[in-house]
Figure (cartoon, rainbow, N blue to C red):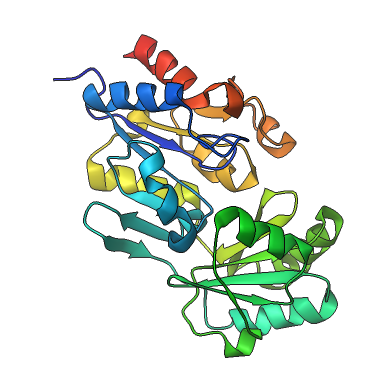
Length: 268
């Protein structure tokens, strides 16, 4: 038996496991390998959809299903199978259309399966699809095939804060609308959160809440920090995360996951 039998560690990807140099450090990889050898289960919970996370799967050892699209999907890469999918409701095209008329400068990036569609591409959508290496097609919302796993609204922070309020004031019962960074506002179905899916994954794996650990750096990670036995956040975390008073660990450029495994090594 290993010292981490029955322990699940769930990490955000960008700016947590994946550093600002766009790599997973050797130190993080070595620590995850040790964690797994000792019986632990390690996985990622990312805002990225399946299409944009799949090229990154081999960067780190992963031995549990991955939480995708901010909790809209649980995907087993070993079996190549969708375990859970929580799509956006059919009203989303209308609702985002209303938002777009109010804020025409917002780019809207939508995910349907492995396809990416964009209404109103702008400088922010251009940077985002280049970063995640996604091919995409320009379509109006009404012409995009469904179902959608998530939509990403893209503009400067001040505009997105107003767009967030517009959506939550009208349809908070339909959507989770949260920032993944200052220029990306993520929209998923109500209850599709990283935290909710982390709990579902733990239950599937037979992991007790006391042995579930999560780490993340931004607003879309707060839901899983709330269900973590110890909520971890890298030193580079957003102010919204820091205000929840997580345990701060090393910066994403200084091997965040390796630091967490050191802490778990002491606990177990």
